[in-house]
Image (tube, rainbow, N blue to C red; front, side):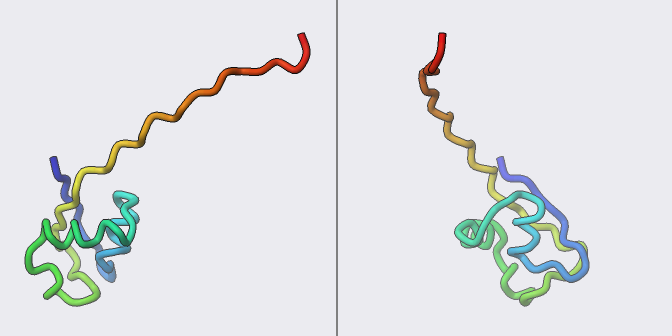
Length: 72
């Protein structure tokens, strides 16, 4: 399920999605695809613009290693 965030005065799209969702440059095409016409707003979004963002990717499980004791 996609979430929505609201732009503040002076926000750019990349700054907004980084600050609110920790999404990087590789995620911008997906954000633009979810928000038809958002590119027409220009480089700085108008304050109050509602932006739909994709769900945050789930982090892969961290592999565990066996604990090695140097001394018993």
